[in-house]
Image (tube, rainbow, N blue to C red; front, side, top):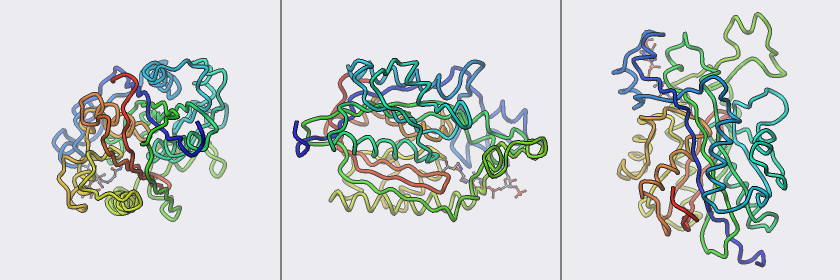
Length: 338
Ligand code: ACO
């Protein structure tokens, strides 16, 4: 194939969530909250938490294996592995991508972690597409995986009810097309860094007895600021991506957005003047799985027939950083169904 006729197709999808389900009533035993409060403010009914022996790398490996098998490619055909995560197995090195590269036998692949919080998978998909359409690789495995339950303060009711664990994966393959990524917008605003932050454990504030006592290794969030950001900037970025692709938002078959919170999805639909059903939602069952949420939603949407060959799909990631990534993706069909 010459570079002028190469397109990036999602050929296979994979998913994994841990077995252990945590209900709102379970959390109400830990903090002063209720099923009614959590459902009405977030839409979340239950979520999955990793168990003993499970980590970001083990979940990513399970999701990645399914995606490779579904794509019908051999592990050694994967040229690059990108793992979007904020919760790597080890804080510095080795990268989670190296652990997964080994576990999956991706003997011919380069591998790196990508840090863009809940926007990470969409950042990764766009990055993979550049490598494919540029001619560098035939197959790139992109995985979004996070184990947020290990970084939640279970005495803080404002955050511990939101976050969860899981992994989702996509094999992006070269295709004569046409289709795949039609347009994208990547964005960042570090002025909002403090709105969603794990303050300790990095080079600025290493873990000490004092920072641990202050819960510095857990997620700190300014919920109102995050809500304000989530219901404005990513929506404008989705509109911009649609404009660049020459489509109207109303002409999209589905929008698969980061599953932070049902109210954010509903507000996005309202602000865009489209029906709520245009935004796929599975946050009620899975909670906020950060980088895993978009691929887990893509998987469910494809499995339930909401995305088919020929569908025009909007992707919308947003999260800590602050970061956002939107894309218009022309779905060419999977090598085998979810
Ligand atoms: N159960 C019961 N009460 C609670 C809980 C809880 N789990 N959490 C907060 N409250 C209380 C607060 O303490 C406060 O009480 P007070 O008035 O006595 O002080 C009251 O509820 C209202 O608190 P607010 O923060 O004003 O609640 P709000 O209606 O804004 O909802 C929420 C909070 C759901 C977090 C909202 O701000 C939000 O959706 N923000 C977006 C955050 C988000 O989704 N983050 C996900 C991660 S970011 C991402 O993925 C991009």
